[in-house]
Length: 190
Image 1 (cartoon, rainbow, N blue to C red):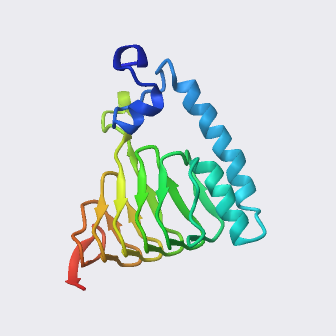
Image 2: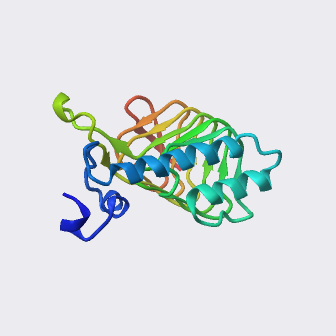
Image 3: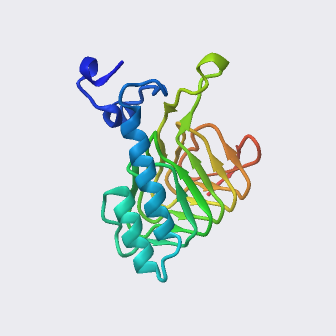
């Protein structure tokens, strides 16, 4: 489906969770946005101080990043425009946010080093594997994501929840739960 049918451009369709094929008539607009993000990311990752990193990420996302939020480079994103960060968020070194499906991080969240947030997936059918299926990730207030954890498409991490280091989270995590393992399972509550 294209924008003439839905009334939305490719970015609106992505936000609505529509699958995007490489032969989409507006795919070039998406590629241009990715190229812009790549250029801005290079500047972000060579920034000299935290304020400069925050400013560069604000350029990438198109939204002001609150002064209480800290991001340690390197930081990687493939698109950037669908990242929303709350206040007092901490993102440690070498995180990767694939945000075509949308990534929302609420206030007071801590994200450890080398965390991967992947809000997009692909069909299982090999003939359609180049299609992107956007599915949002939401990390609720005061959650803590441990080092090298991976959060998969469509997952919500509940308020105050903890994701253990190295966990792979493929299902929603309830508020106040601690999850660990591959796939991540609730091991206790806070």
